[in-house]
Each structure stands twice: as C-alpha cells, then as structure tokens.
Length: 107
Image (cartoon, rainbow, N blue to C red):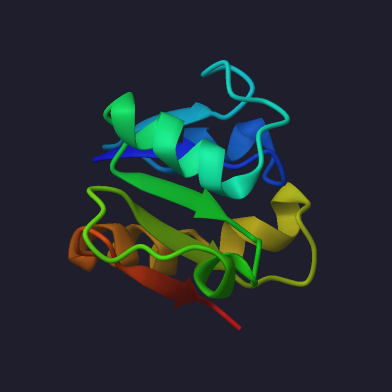
C-alpha cells in the first residue's frame, strides 16, 4: 500500500509501517497545500492512503469516487511515542481500507 503521511505526523512513523511504501507530504513535494489540493495531488501521484491526525478531514472533503482514502489517527499527541501504540491498529486499517473511504483509528 502507498501511504502518504500528512505534515502533522512525524516522519519517523513511516519506519513503523513495515510492508508499506510510505513517504511524508513534504518529501513528496506537497508541503503547505490545503486539504483538497493535497488529496488531488496525492491521488494523481498514485498514493492510496493519506494518513493524518486531522479529525475534520472527512467533513471537509468528499471522498466519494476518489481513488485515495484517508486514515485518521487519534492519539494523545502527534509525538512518535504517542503514535507507536497505534501502529498495530494503523496496520490493520491499511489492510482493510477501501478506495474513497475515511476511517478513524484509535481513540
């Protein structure tokens, strides 16, 4: 699965998502883009999932008919120590997520 990590997530999180092609938004050249533009660029570049902590994304963006999905992680903070416990749930979500779907992970 090709997973793009939103700017709000630490880049080292990708090391924990073994078995997936992961990159950060800045490294992919899309830093500073608004959500709608970011999703469009990511989709055109072949990313399958945008991993974010932006809880409002599903309310702001219509994913119906899109090739990209959004996985929203809930954690105490966006610091790596707070996200690592969510990795098993993230990996499980990546196995089951469908195109154009927004799912929430953790709590």
